[in-house]
Amino acid sequence: MTTLTMAELSAIEARHPDLMKPRFWSVYRIPIAAVTIALYFLFCWWFFAIGHVLSTSNWGIASIYLADWVSYEERPDIDIAADGTMQVKWGRYDPIGPNPDPDWLVTETKTVTRTIETGGSAEAAPAQPKSSFSFVAPVNRGTADAETAEKTETRTETVVSHALVQMSRTSAIDVSPPEVMVTHGDQRLQLKFGADGSVTPSGALPDWATQRAPGEKVVVSFGFPGWAEIRSDAIKVHKRYFGWENFFFDIDSRLFGKSWGQIARLIWSGDRLDPAQSNLSLAINDFLYNPSWQHLDVWSKLLQTVVMAFVGTLLASLIAFPLAFIAARNITRNKPLNQVTKRFFDFQRSVDMFIWALFFTRAFGPGPLAGIAAIFFTDTGTLGKLYAEALENIDDKQREGVKSVGASPLSIQRFGVLPQVLPVFASQALYFWESNTRSATIIGAVGAGGIGLKLWEAMRTNQDWENVGYMVVLILIVVFVFDTLSNALRSRLMGTRKRS
Image 1 (tube, rainbow, N blue to C red):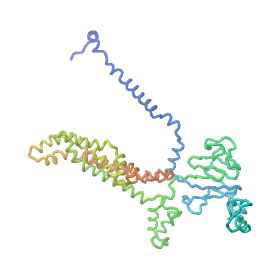
Image 2 (image 1 turned 30 degrees about the horizontal axis):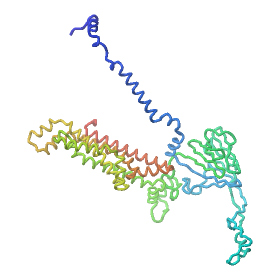
Image 3 (image 1 turned 60 degrees about the horizontal axis):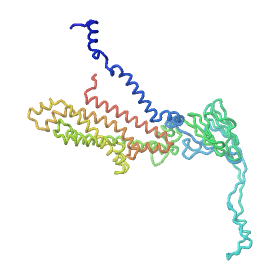
Image 4 (image 1 turned 90 degrees about the vertical axis):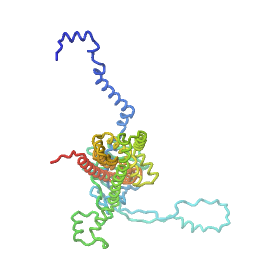
């Protein structure tokens, strides 16, 4: 091998300038690619209005939604009467349970005597003309006046005269009608109630308080500890706690409010709380049929989702298996038949599983049958295509070897083809089973049954976000278990597991 001197290279370059000149693409390909990518991202930024979306997004609401997944609220209402007295009311299904008396809501009471209306006519009878004539019997004016006279009754009641809501160590709402003092950190907001029902702040509102229009209600937010809605006739408090309320036993359960030690003693040796069943049976029953969390129903729907994914994937694998042999060009030497089968696969997989679920929900009605059919149709096309491609990439030497000994066509496929593709087929089927466990949750939201429908129902209420978080955690656990199991089985089938 001879090397050229610089003089010889210069002479060659002089005789063939185009040969030594670098190509345009080799010089500018990196800058062109960088500019193209930058222009593409700019186009996406403009086309999807990403800047506008980011500038107008309310990240505070997003954080509240996320907090609702892992927290619950106690919601007392402080009703304010026209004379400034108050009454604290709790919702029927409030998680604090019966006879609520939290230490964060301190009230001062007093006794008042009131005269209240207990009956009488709400509207005065219309006046009759003096010269009117009637064929009806004359009315006894004295009796009519007695019947329409308003009846009154004097009552002595105990009312709340002052209330202090301690939202956190640094945040509180001090209610002394017609004034409310709100403290948040080192800031204070004084609100005054007008005779016309208006709410007027004494100064500028801080960033943690909002009022849509002058005189309307004021909403104060304290971050994770909660928020409150202040009106002239009521103050609606939302006190937030970390965790899931009454996860094990609802407020109507006989075990509500008891410690784990008390529950264990009751189950082990305590007297029966319900004569008809043991305390253990009572605890299990109250847990499974907890009306707030519906554990048994949620678990049943989750199992329904898993079965739906398994049956749909299994049926798709069984149908795609023989069709793949017809679609493979090296197995079935019939081009029109190959093309018809492959176009059938394209038709099935080109329509998304979500669309198939909508179609079958209309056809079969809501339920897991529609979900199974949607998974079956979509995966038959996808698995059929993958199986056919695996068959077209086999080593023909093994098949020719089996054929050379005079084996039948069926034996050729059994001993010359299946040993090569069966691990691949099983691996792909396992992967789709794992993937369909997630997909079954999505299609369940459109009526295909399973936990997806229950998840969608909880989201539609816009209040049960802790139930949404509970179901999402269950789905994550199931997907994690199935992913681990599927990976282990695929590794064993494909022979990639390391031996110790």
